[in-house]
Every structure is written in C-alpha cells, then in structure tokens.
Length: 409
Image 1 (cartoon, helix red, strand yellow):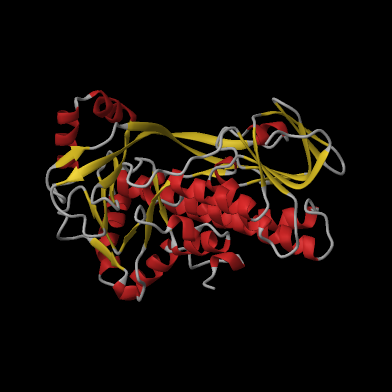
Image 2 (tube, helix red, strand yellow):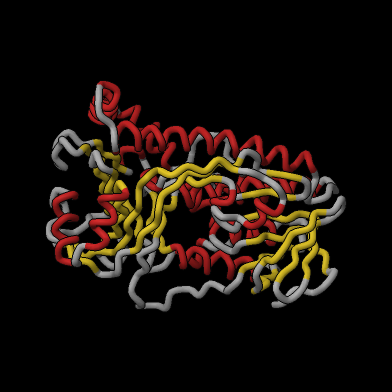
C-alpha cells in the first residue's frame, strides 16, 4: 500500500521487524480502535512449508510467547518449524561439558520448557499477518525524512507523505527515526564478531541449548526443529576473521574443538553469516510525539539471547501505555504516556544490559581473581535449586514489571 498525502494515523511505526510488527499487531487489536500503520520497505515472506530452516534465529522466552499470543501471532508461529528447548548447559573453557557445568532444567522449575528457538523471518511474517488481520495497514516504502509538528508528525517516503499523532522508531540500530528526531545514543564496539550458521550434528541435541565460555568469546549451540543446531559463535575480531576465512572443513574442526565435541562431529548446513557486535544505549527513548523500541533504543550482546525478547517487551509496554491513554480519551502521543514507557523500559533494559556485559567480561573473556570467582559461581549456582529457579524465572521473562500482554492469560 502506498502512502496518501495528509492521511492521519494514530500511530505510525517505522520498521516492520519483530519489535515494530509486534507493537503494530498489539495496537491494531486493542479494544479501542486505533488507526495504525507500519512503514517497511518490503513485505516479509513466511518460510515455505518444508523449506530449509534459516540460520538467523532467536530464542523466545515465556513472556515473549505470551506477548505473541496476545498479538494474534503465536498460532501462526507454533508450527513444525518451532523448536522448544527443555534444558540449558553452560560451562567454562577450563571445565568439561559433563562435569562442573551449570544445568537449567525446565522440569525442575515446573515449566514445560525454557523457551523456543524460532526463525526471525517466521516471527516477523506471522506478526505482519496478525497486524493486517486486525486492520493494520502496511506501507511498503522507505522513509526519507521526518518532520515533527506540535499536533502530529509527518513521515516523507519515496512515494508520498504519512501523518500520525505518534511515530515509533523500530528501524534498527542505525535508526533513521532516532537521528531525525534528534535523539542520541552511546555506541561502543565489543571488538567481537558473531558467526551464525546451521550445523548437522552427529548426536541428538536432545532439546538442549549448549553454551561454552571460551576465554576468547562465547559459543552457543541452539536446537532446531529439523534436528540440526544453530550456532552463534561470538569471537574476538581477529579470531572471527580467521574462522570466516577458513575452509568449511577447517571451520568444522575448529567448531567441534570449541564445543568439546558435546554433539559429536559437526557439519555446516548453511553459509556462515557474520555480524560485528556493538552495544547501543539511547540516552532517551522518547521525544515529542516519538518513541523508540527494539534495536533503535538498545542493542545488547547476543550471549544471553535476550535481544529479541527485550524488543518484544518494549513493543508490549508501549502498546499498553498508548492503549491506556486512548481509553482515557488522550492523544496516542500524550507526553505522560511516553514518559511512563521510557521510565518503565529503560530501567529494565539497563539492568539486563549490565548483567550481560558482566557475563561477557568475567565469563567469556575474564582472567584474574574476579573472573575466577565468577567462573566458580557457575558451580555454586548449579548446587542451589533456589538460585536456579530465580535464574530460570528471569530467563523466561517472568520477573520484573511486566505488561499485561506478557502475563499468562
């Protein structure tokens, strides 16, 4: 759909990735009808049934499952391509994968699983479908400029103009919306590169996620629905470049060694993809008639698998405060509602980002007394059922101040 000049929407979301599409779907299905648009350069296409699984996947928490269900998307995601995982095993470079390992087990926490591994494209397409099914409008176009006025915001695109009472930047780490509305961010490099691929494994993944802190980064093996595993190898830049330049056979040998053979011999099923890792923290999440969600507001290290979950929680909180404002007869861009969103999410994200950076510093790269203490801490946590329940609840997204859509229905 092309933009129409002078068309006034309640909310325009720039970016139709999982965070933006989720915010749109939640707002579109709100009890009080809102006119919601998503500006995305190309419609996401759902994976064809029986096609190979994508290498780009996310770990979805229980809170994310609830949010996606509230948005009307979960029924479209919960198919044969979705893989629940029931255990997680974490160990250090100096330990073996079967001893001195921290094990989280869903059964011990009284949960059916610890979360799901899902293709990013599957989640995005399901959310866009749910968004349109609830009356939302998808504009396949590119943002060219943003002009903020007292009572509305105008988004200039390649083919026209859209106007809305509120604009939401969900357009990634290099957010054009963030720049256009004058919000700044602290950006720093981790000096690491994430290597992502799908691999066939000699042994069954047994619905288990494996993670090893290597001293030069972190290696995660995530179970996939076709029996293969997704790898996310966050390595120091120099090592990562060598791994990317290695032949497939050399890479497979390095990978098996780094994983200590927990799944036996490994064979690449897809190409290797790479991403330079940076941390990003917007100084503010909101401005006059504007808000940021997902990677436009914050980017964290992938070692904890929380990036997608944080973005979905942003979407859920923003949708909740906008819906509440609308129910009270307020403008969707009401300043008090945006301030509430920012206070709510910024503190939660900062807490998670600090914890993730500590894991990277003291477990994935650490040396010295503090790192040794942190590494011993894995064994201490494993011996405490109560502490493990706390960690599992946090990983499931069931701790902290939750929006209503993230709670069990």
